[in-house]
Length: 512
Ligand SMILES: Cc1cc2nc3c(=O)[nH]c(=O)nc-3n(C[C@H](O)[C@H](O)[C@H](O)COP(=O)(O)OP(=O)(O)OC[C@H]3O[C@@H](n4cnc5c(N)ncnc54)[C@H](O)[C@@H]3O)c2cc1C
Ligand code: SF4
Image 1 (cartoon, protein in one colour):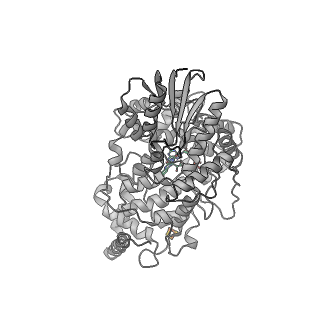
Image 2 (tube, helix red, strand yellow):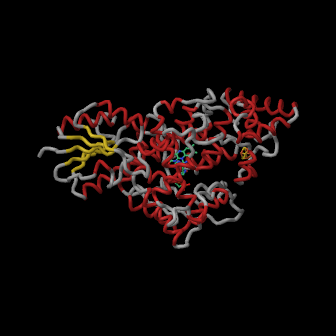
Image 3 (tube, protein in one colour):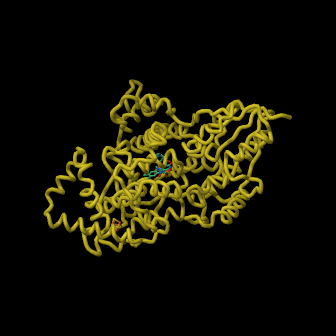
């Protein structure tokens, strides 16, 4: 029987509703899933991330077979596997001679270009409809605006989606944003919800062996993998979050605590990004919980803003500005990424904690990414490409469309300020306020210079002085530069010199 259509599904397209599967016919169409070594290696992805994606792909293939589809599944260890997605598509095309080939547009510019360049007349690329805002809708919103502020985009999305809106078209609670209520540190002794567990089945065990064999040289530990790889388990994780953590999500969204990696976070980004959970449904559930009175408005709005606002906005920025976006380096940073980002071997307790749990679970929450590992990279002037590649490699949820704007834009301010009207830079005082890390640190957060001083302090002022020309005109930086002016010359010099000393140590390959 000849194949009418060949449908290529990528590892982050494991959604039965994905556009390439729309109107698919098990009788006439063939589905292709490929484990491509090239995709696992173009940055050294965390072994748990590779395990997660490959196991979810194999489970989804099983699901499709149960629906009656014929699935050509090319495993990593298939001797004929060419190692690349387009290479395998070319082989399948030759083997099956399909009437047409369908693919939902990849979420990564690199891959989309590669498929476009194939220039095969029978290849149809369909838009990815798993988002609230299409690429075209975002471009229309952005057109003619001087500034692309997330807050204004988010309001339009709220209106369009009708989420948390009154019948009169006003935001519920009389405000669009309850962020001011969402910056609490975690009070000592607060009980944090237990996490559900997901035992490895035969498929996951097999993939784990394969990953251990093929990616042993990658950063991060494989043992202890405990994350959903099916739609049913992703749903269980989501329902657990709704029941046990969502109500406190708003309050403690920015808090950090020693040896508590999940706190009141949902852990759903990875599942959502590969198609195991639907973001639209997730937002409706949160709205329903607020309507039912089980979660407060600051939690519901805060959570919906992350998905309907930030997640959609960063994707919009990515597709609007790629490929040139990836090359931006507004501060002209050149410094290499310190080795301890890959090992966690540093005396800075906040960095140890954030990197340590990343090694262990391929996870850190937003504020750890932004204000600890990100803040350090910003203050020390790490080359954007190197820090972006690190984030892309180490987090289970990392995909280029969402990782790049968050890192290059939000963390490094390398795009000149699309994602933040000012850089998210902070001294050790911010970390002290939002965590209990400083108490157990070898450094003293109260000291500015000298061997015992918290490195974030002098590095912060060094960054402020180093970029005075670019940043002092920014109204949101006015207070910082007035404080700098008020400092005595000797204090300014001491901070500069200690900052220089720390940077020289990094350049010499030392850890801090
Ligand atoms: C430097 C840096 C890199 C990041 N890289 C990624 C990435 O590669 N993939 C990714 O999904 N998220 C990324 N984020 C955003 C955010 O940190 C993660 O989505 C979040 O930590 C995932 O954990 P969670 O599911 O427990 O999220 P929660 O804290 O429970 O938040 C709920 C959901 O909101 C969404 N969300 C929250 N903030 C953002 C944001 N800034 N951008 C996009 N979505 C957001 C996510 O889908 C998340 O699952 C990055 C943030 C920073 C600062
Ligand atoms: S003292 Fe400084 S380096 Fe140590 S945990 Fe606090 S902020 Fe981090």
